[in-house]
Length: 366
Image: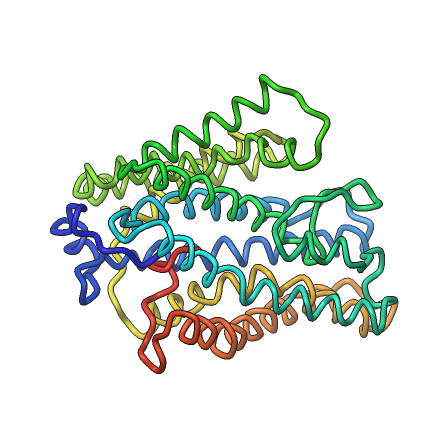
């Protein structure tokens, strides 16, 4: 969300990594972290393929699923950090729609078309009017296999994203100009799920405790606003803590709980905020990959699946490993193309910017 940051302590934040023409801080490290999180999810799905094809006991890239937790914490932070309630609810909502919908709808409709023309390519995915409408409008529904996910299966995370935006917008509609109201709403919704057990797919989905990861991002934003300079001074400590967290997660891959994902994700994002990233050709390249992280996240499963569909059977393990990493790199290339050819043009058109250069994706929010 592009909002004015006149109410933020931009003097310290701007010194941290520079600022845009409007005075908005550029958090390059978070943008790079977005790519790292997205690529971690790519590796997770690659590892899942290896696990099935090579009959492995566990996913060697199982830690990659943590990328989703990091994304949710970043989203909570960025929405709280950049939203200007003074611009109004409609401005906030429209920018959220423009950021999320064009790519998601394009990929969903493209997948639906493939499902109708060549359904054998989509394995168990069923395309009908109900599933298509619910997928397009972020309504959770249960598939035949018992999973709750839309046609574009990673869109389940977007359902949570859009619900979080709705809660944030509700806080604005109620007249509150602080992110503490959306924070309270997120906590209240999760608490309601515990107190009111209702047999409903939608209710159970949207009261899932995973929403608290957005709340963690909001809390981190509040702390960062107040103690921006302290983050820079604490960089060595936070980086050391990050290394420790990575070691623990690698040592105990089987631990599955909300806080096992959320707390380490907060530490990762905090560490990224403490690191100053200078604008260089290499960092600019990484920032571009961060810009394309949304495209990478949504499109990569189908790039990986395309290789599965066309690859010869009974390939040796070394060949599968080499080709797997080549396909991952191909997914990154495809994501940059989608970002340049679909995401940016659609935002320019829908925001009425014409040929004017858009602000970095991070400032626009996830």
